[in-house]
Image (cartoon, rainbow, N blue to C red):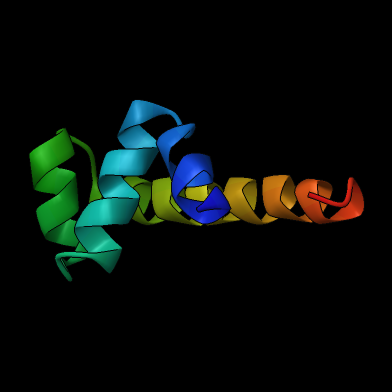
Length: 65
């Protein structure tokens, strides 16, 4: 499935943060503690991961994949 591939292609820290939030329902504070960053930085990593996935998915759709 393309979405799983797009997630797998993320930077490791973004992928970890996204999966902890979406699959494990961790709080931003918990994710920050795990990654050694602030809760705000954890939130930003997740937002950037989502933006990257959306951008790459839109590109695939445009290419007809």
